[in-house]
Image (cartoon, rainbow, N blue to C red; front, side, top):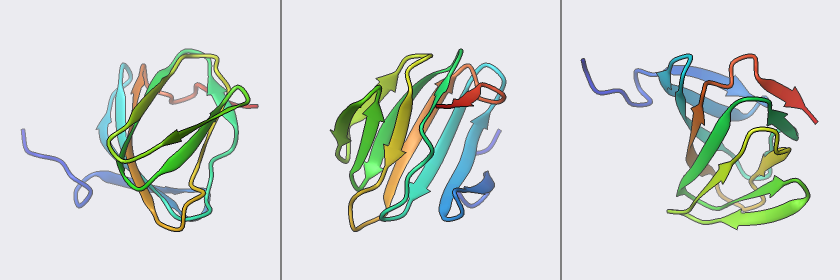
Length: 113
């Protein structure tokens, strides 16, 4: 076993400008560190089985869940139940860095809303 961080984790780009690093990538759970630059957002979607927890490491973000906008600041988190349509947005002038923990993994479980 050895420590994992962004320098050695599997990296991917989403939305053309956002970064994700797989810190834990298992079928029963995933933990991803993500960076979303100013003005970027993900597509509105939901997960049929996965429960997710978003935790803001730096910056601030808005998560829209089923029509309700919730602001998250550094050090705050939010749990999203399966089946809840949601969208992560960075409406601030700075990058937002956060962790998203999913149980089970969201692989093959994302449905655009």
